[in-house]
Amino acid sequence: MKKVRIRGVGHYAPERVVTNEYLATIVDTNDEWIQTRTGIQSRRFVAPDQTTSDMAAEAARMAMKQAGIQPDDIDLVVVGTSSPDMLYPSTACVVCDKLQLKSPTAFDLQAGCSGFVYGLTTATQFLRTGLKKNALVIGADAISRFIDFSDRTTCVLFGDAAGAMLLSSTEEGSDQVLCSIDGTDGSGGKYLSMPAGGAQKPASIYTLQNHEHSVHMNGKEIFKFAVRISIYMIENMLQQTGLTIDDIDHFVFHQANVRIIDAAVNRMGFSKEKVIYTLHEYGNTSSASIPFTLSLANQNGTIKENDIVLMVVFGAGLTYAGSIVRW
Ligand SMILES: CC(C)(COP(=O)(O)OP(=O)(O)OC[C@H]1O[C@@H](n2cnc3c(N)ncnc32)[C@H](O)[C@@H]1OP(=O)(O)O)[C@@H](O)C(=O)NCCC(=O)NCCS
Image (cartoon, rainbow, N blue to C red; front, side, top):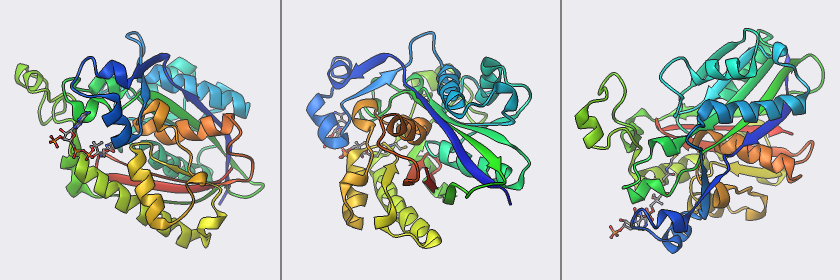
């Protein structure tokens, strides 16, 4: 088997900052409720002329530049997203066009917010076997386009962003992806869904009137699942690798709700100082949450070479995914 190296990371967030105070002017909510129940203070929304593939391409450009890899050398593109530009072509194909990539294998991976980490594990298999040499794994979502702004239980949670990682297959050195875990509890699909717009319920005047083209969520069920599954993934990955909590330099949780992260951290009994948070400023950026946080932390020097980073995420499906990497 060949080794997988992380060559570069990138991120992008749109310019428009949407504060809790602003949301309170359009829906019955307030800054105090949002901050105490979620930790979120603001988020970013795409501009009217921007879409998911634009953010994905920006994050990918940054990762390619950092890696020093040219467009012609990318032979795999995986885009984790649940807000694709359109049903088809896939957002990955649109990104190939925007970045002028030669002819890579390119596909979207729909695993809710777990899309990027699922993509990381998927790309890793292509690279280890040597089938592909340079993979762009992107997590990008413009969930603001699918939010019902009359539903205060969901519209305060999400923000738009993209994150990317460029991985290469090599013969030398050690593999930087130390382990992974992923899975699905399909019985929980009903707790987080967008009911209409697919083959089961195509767009109609009724689906529009019933607000069925937006995020529908049972927050309490997701919350319970999130805490339980995050702890399970951490314990499983520590067991797989023989590492201990003390060996982990940084924990990157899905940036959904500070109370979910803190509940998992408190139950496992480790220090919050090792946890990297971006949700206060950017909210839940869905598939972008993990790679966006990784890239930002890399850029500001929080994550350094050789650090051990553990990431866990959950999402619609209900899916879950985690990985431990050596930076
Ligand atoms: C959504 C979430 C923040 C709600 O927090 P909570 O503590 O469970 O709050 P509840 O749903 O019990 O609501 C409590 C009260 O606040 C109200 N409320 C809900 N959203 C509100 C808002 N934005 N502003 C003000 N009040 C709000 C509710 O109507 C409810 O009022 P009631 O008691 O009069 O009925 C929380 O459940 C959560 O984060 N779940 C996980 C969601 C998630 O991660 N989704 C993405 C997965 S990828």
